[in-house]
Each structure stands twice: as C-alpha cells, then as structure tokens.
Length: 149
Figure 1: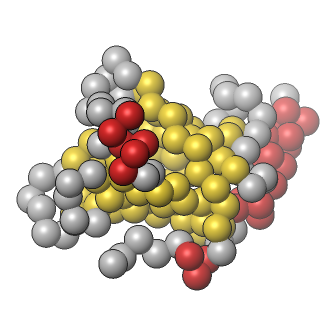
Figure 2: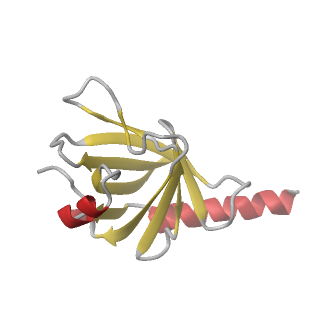
C-alpha cells in the first residue's frame, strides 16, 4: 500500500513539473466551425501553473461571441485513472492526456463552465451531459497564450 501511494505521489510530481508554467491552445478556423455546426468553441487555452496547488487557468472564446470566458480549476492525479492522465475540476471536470508532449488531448463528459466578466451567467463548454467533448491542443510559448484581443 505504501509503495502504491508513493507511486501515485511520484506521478503527481511528474505531472506538476511537466506542466509548470505550460500553455496549450487551439484556435478553430471559420471553415472548421462551419463543418461542425454543433461546436461552439472558437478558441480554447489552458495555462497550467503551480502556486501551492496545481492549477489550470482556462480561457474560451465562443463562435459569434466576443466575450472572453474563463475559469480556474484544480488539477490532480487521481489513482483511479490511467497513468499519464490528469483530472481538473471545480466548475465541471475535464481530463488531460499527453501533458508531457507537444499536443494535449482534453476530454470531458458533460463539459465544464466558464464565466465572462461582462456576462451574468456562466456558459458551458459542452452543454449536454450526454455528449463527450474532445479538444486537441498544441503546446505554445507562454507569450502566445493570451486570448485577449
């Protein structure tokens, strides 16, 4: 039991160090949005930081909406999921795989919520609990991580 806990602790440390001050981003073209009419996400950015806790700052722009929606989520390595996958939650949950590579796949079942300072209500990245959402993001330099106009 002690060696199992130690192994999970080591995975958590590896994930934290691999993601410390890391940025992953995806911007979808208008052509892509037209081909996937149910997709509302235009741009998605994840910025990982360690500040005592392991944090993911999420920023989203939706098609047809100029507001910048954001959320801050706590991430961890739960023992019940496969090695190399992290979970991030607070306003819903997403899982991230490939955090130690140039591309990260995040997936969520039912989505997670983000808020815009200029809007009173949160907005769901995926609004339907029956839909699994997948987003492939590319690792970017921190200077290219900002979604503000």
